[in-house]
Length: 387
Ligand code: GLA
Image (tube, rainbow, N blue to C red; front, side, top):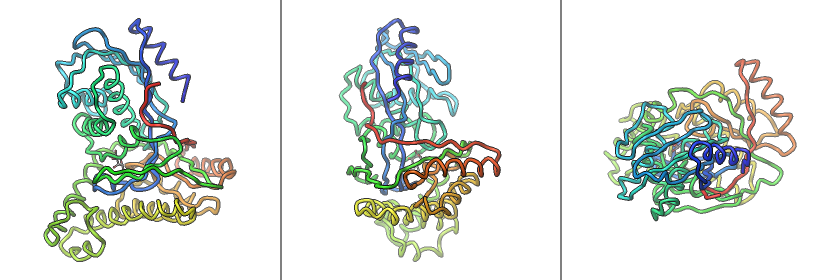
């Protein structure tokens, strides 16, 4: 927990509103493997982390008057609950307004509230600061207004907030991880049934290190929606022969090969990646359970290649960082993490090698792109909670 930020939101709340707030936290997430499988109803293996967003919240006393203060954007926004609508794209307010709108759609009544928030999830790093904002808002409002939602309801409403207010047709992974994560555990989630299981993350002599490329491309959200459409058009072709296939998760590589001739070449590569990535999640989980870290690392390498050449969601900076890591003996495997076009690489690295690795990669990255790479250490912490 970042007590400096907790103090900051609490103090700012008192200054702005002269009230005592209730404090909440909702974390960012990592994902060990399973990118772009969630909206294909497949498997993912995320975990909630120590970096998160902290909220100070309280009823405003008014029926419909609300105020939001973002310390990180240094902005205050006042609005009325009776006039909810999305602001322009990329506005931070949308994640909060979207959640309020979903709560209202679900037939529950929120009253006026005040909120101050701030966080330490690097934006655009692929660690889901937006899911942390949505889930934290939902959890806080559920608590202060005793709305009675279960955690899974709040996961779904937070995901819909992102669809309807932020305009990204995301899957359910990020919100699920932020809301349902547990300290020291990874979460194997079946995005079709929403069945899930926790696994302790035991990496023995190895550790996880994130390297932030500090690149976040604007096309991330538009290309994300394009990938989703490509998967849907792949399913439509598969359905001509196999009507029972509702999502790529239901299809095998053999079935895909059978309809390859009827499919656009790009769509074929997208589908191939998703079907293989989905299998990798299961293999990776087995490897972890068996203590086969070399096997797990190899799956990260193959996943990186798939995202680079078949799903085409990486970028030169990320490819460089992953190649650099994957050519070393002290790294068992590295791949891009998250939706793509920037963000972080996830590295499974020998304990004790981190400093040297960071030094060498930083220098090489600086030379090649004239940019800074930022290492991020992660600890797995609990999901959304009241402090
Ligand atoms: C983003 C989305 C998730 C998921 C990942 C890619 O983080 O919000 O739903 O699709 O990209 O795995």
